[in-house]
Length: 201
Image 1 (cartoon, rainbow, N blue to C red):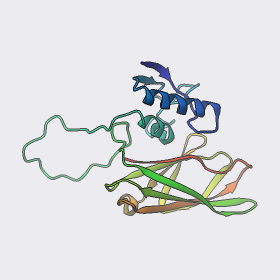
Image 2: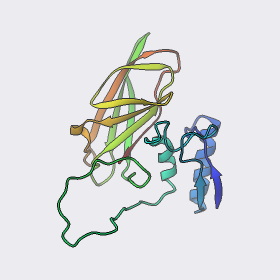
Image 3: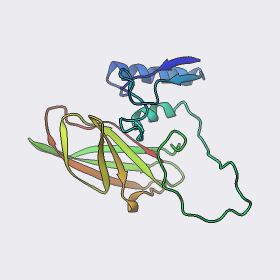
Image 4: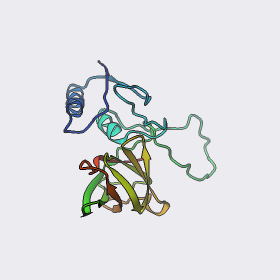
């Protein structure tokens, strides 16, 4: 079993991100057990699977680790033979509710000028079943969002943003594409979104 491993970066450019990706491949290839550090966000050297609000999940990190996790199906402990019909509860994102349905995100800078830029995200359902709700996350350093469309954009921590769909855009049928995006002011040369990932919840 691999003991605790973890880190803040999971991209394919930084040393830490490359190391985490290679270790995950090694664990998967050799069918090893593992523990990951950490769940809570206040680990100063690694950060956590949770973001600083202690509720939202770091989606790129969860997406990396989901390669090592089997699908989880949650069943109620006691279920009557004829359960009453009730509204579907609002889903909350947690390790047990992250689906295996594959969502592909295409990022395009649709406009770019001296002081600002606009980004378009296209979220495609590549699975065979519909997605009933989803969430997208990305990191962005030197930029400030001015406006956005077709979803809610909220900043979590210093550089991460979490995107949640509007009610009419929560469902994505197989092969369907949802389009959202934003425009922002440039605050430096490192302004483009990075580590973009989407999951169904």
